[in-house]
Every structure is written in structure tokens, then in C-alpha cells.
Amino acid sequence: MKKSLVIITLLSAILFCSMYIFSSILPPLSEWKPNIINSVRLWIDIIIFLALYIIPLILYKSGIHAMKYIMAIFCGMGIFVSLTIVIGLSIMSSIFGSASASPVVIVLCTATLIANIIWYILAFRNV
Image (cartoon, rainbow, N blue to C red; front, side):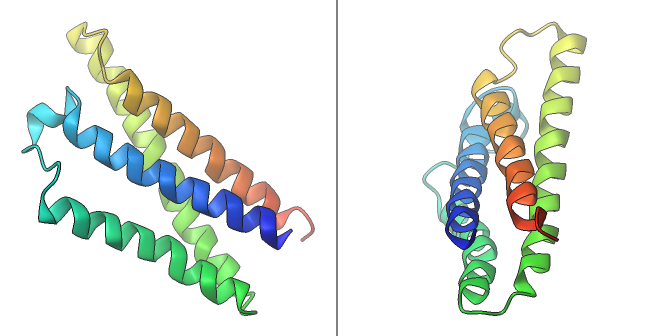
């Protein structure tokens, strides 16, 4: 179980970081904030995101099983962020009539959402 939890955690981290990167460069989200691609701020944000995934994962793998609950909190926040972006882009698309509401970001958010739900199933199926 630990191996599959590690894999899905790393997949979730990659998807979340990809979602963040693509939302900063693709319209309509990039039109509301400065394009931060290839900036120091982008890389600092990515490092923080990865640290929030990897540090609890390392502690969990080293035998501190209570870290699973900390990871569950972060996973829940990831679900909230993904749902918020998908719903927000869907509403913007219907209001403004724009069919190009960043389908790449919507796909990445949906994939992140699925990965996080699978994470919960793997982490708590035997509890």
C-alpha cells in the first residue's frame, strides 16, 4: 500500500504543479495576472508546492504514520483548488461565451481531482 500511495502522491504533485504552470500561461487566467512563466516567483512557488507534497511523504515513508493525516489535509486542499478552478472556468466560459476556457487547465484540474480522490481511497481503504 505504501508504494501505491507514494506513486499517487507524486502523480498528484506533478499534476498540481502542471496545473499551476499552465494556468499562468494560458488564457483566460493569464489575462488577469502577469505572465509568470520562467520567473523566479514561478520556481519558488513550484518548490513550495513540491515541499508540501514531498516532506510529509518522506516522513510518512520513514514510519511516522500520522503524516498520512497531514497529507490528507493537503490532498483536501488540492481537491478544493481543482474544483474551484474547474467550476470557475466553466462559469466564465458560459458567461463570456468563450469556448476556449483553457481546456488544458480543465483537463489538468480534473486529472488532479481524480488523483486526489484515488489518494484518499488508497490511504484510508483499510481504516
